[in-house]
Amino acid sequence: MPHDELAGKIATWVERSGFALELRVARAFAQAPHLPREPFTEIGPVEVTPAKMYRDRTENKWRETDMLAEVHSQRDQNRVLRVVAECKSGAGKPWVVFTDPHRSWVTDDDAFSGFLFRWAGALDVHKIWKSARGAPCLPAKVTGYALAEARFTEDQNQKQPTDPDVPYRAVRQAMAAAMSLHEEERADADTYVRITVPIVVTAAPIFECSLSQTGEVLTVPVNYAALYAQPEADRTPLAVQVMTEDHLRNEWVPGLDETLRNLSWI
Image 1: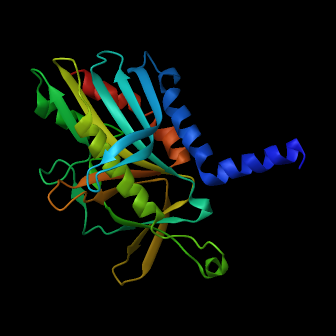
Image 2 (image 1 turned 135 degrees about the vertical axis):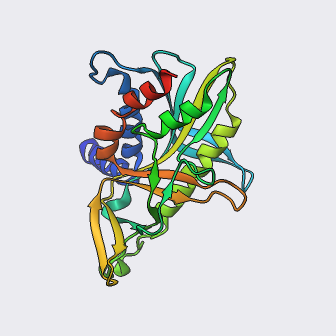
């Protein structure tokens, strides 16, 4: 096979396998400090670790998450937002987020959290918590309670049919990795703030699905959703943010600046 043809096949495989998406997500975070900001950026050093290893607490096994990005504040580098990302190509199959206006959660409730929070030193923790909840990258409200990949009639004839549980497993993996890395993390500083956020990035289109008052199925295309996730029976539920690649690049990563600004003035 000619080298040019082989190179083309490899490029197609890298894209379809999801590796290209992982590389683009890592690059988006690495480039975050260089995004234009006025009058200055709050984003300081960003450490991106692809294929970060962690120990899964539930099965006591070493696993790999697609990316860990540690985004430091320019003002105080001991204020860090740690983003644990799972990346799924989606193979063009829509992801469906099931929502219900009667089943929503506000993340300032003691029984629910939009992120993992660790601190040390003489800090006003209540003010930091409230400020964090108002930040663009930290969800204040969660309406999604389930996630699946849509399968259609024509998919049944495929040799490798789509797996509707792929998005659900991605959410579980992101949550498990975030909790493990958050608990293992140690800081040398006497005063610090660490916030860990699990996200899932997909190249697939995302739709919200709900029922109307009359029971009719309603679907709406979206770029972002925050899902309720229960890590273990005895653990506080956590929010996992699910988004398209475009939303990550155009909205979420640029929102890191304001998020760190909220955390750094306190």
